[in-house]
Image (tube, rainbow over all chains, first blue to last red):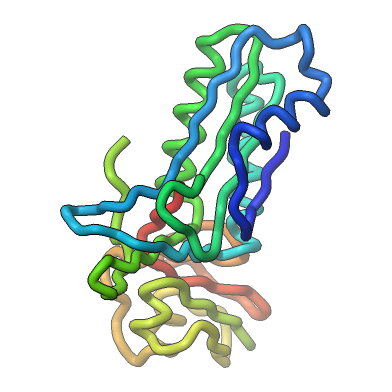
Amino acid sequence: MQIEISESPFSPWQRMEAHRQQSALAGKYGATAVFVGSMRDFNEDDAVSAMRLEHYPAMTEKYLHELAAQAMQQWPLLDVLLVHRVGEVQPDDTIVLLAVWSAHRADAFAACRHLMEELKSRAPFWKQETLRNGRQRWVEKNTPG
Amino acid sequence: MTIDVKFFASLRERVGRGDARVETAGPVAVEEVWRQCTGQAMPANVLMAVNLEYVQAGYPVHDGDEVAFFPPVTGG
């Protein structure tokens, strides 16, 4: 299980492959479920040019570790990789990478969905958008999953 | 007793500071910590944590605890 907060841009595909190669997963897993969340250049009918992601560092880390550990208890998962961006973000940047490995697809799908929905509703991150017209605003709520 | 308080995101801007320190005579509810920091009743939709765990408004805060107030989260 690996949880990371990243202050700089990252490639989700490179991170996932690096994690897979350095783990002892080879031959053990039959399913990999992946969610990648990226920054859009629009929100609520407005053009968005940039975003800043703020978090509560100590609580974020604690919450995400407990969330992933709980999911590994609830489903027979082989591994979880979660990387979440903070700081200044540009359109098309990856905001979150979640990869879940298990022997069979049902567990990987279910755990991946559960982890993302819990993260989005409980993990202490906040987005502040800069619109193309220069105005800044806090995103008030996430869209329903 | 001394309580450390943090405000995040839009609430930090609304309150006008990110950190505060509150002195009280004894244990108080989280919502009372908000009142002492801001002089106002706590608005709806404020989320609260004590020592990095979510709590409700009536949760008792003790000496040395870290209290945080923040708006609904929007990560992912």
